[in-house]
Image 1 (cartoon, rainbow, N blue to C red):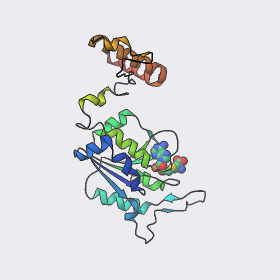
Image 2: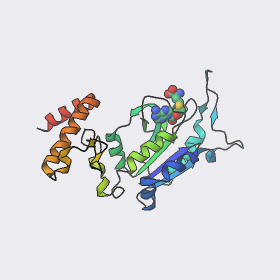
Image 3: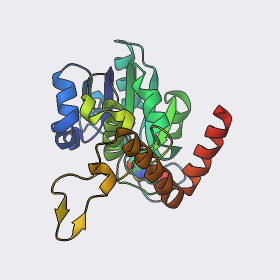
Image 4: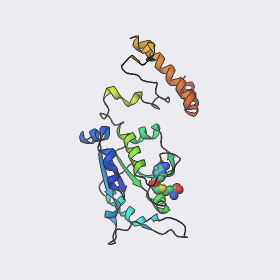
Length: 234
Ligand code: SAH
């Protein structure tokens, strides 16, 4: 898979992509992540990427031309499944979207700044818009890093069996059950007896029961959806 990220702050990705699971995935060639500095696609000597908004008002707007030049350059090299713009008014990111994106071959992620990007880019060049939550960030970089992380960990071979993504929250429509490790007792805080029983069937049932109960309490919307889906399957 290729992920091409367009940004005016390329160095913001140094941290998140140079550690842990993403780093390993890149080293194993399971994903190529290319960061493109939008200023390299400007034609003026000041490398200008933004301008005042038509109609007035606060904040600058990112201009069409550098973004179009960058996207055209990328498209001349390969065919992209999606050109994703990270935006607070986009589709809310969830595990289903990350699962679907992990099956794609080539993705572009475009990071906005300032007041946002000229609307015509969204109309003509962007094919998908994703938000990571109902709050406003100063730029799309952290959102692109979140989206990339959630996709890359799903690629075959990235996670070992012991950390399999299939047992994570949301994959089966429920949040994860609680987990424990040694010691068995700390102060007087104990590990639930069933987990020490060695009885796989009981442990499996306990985990499902805990996951269901947690989802009902913490994510009522998700729980209702899960109930409907289970009824549909019967
Ligand atoms: N004026 C815009 C906010 C611009 S914030 C508005 O009110 O909608 C600047 C940039 O940060 C956006 O263009 C987008 O790329 C990014 N961004 C901000 N919040 C985000 C979020 N919740 N999810 C994804 N991207 C976000």
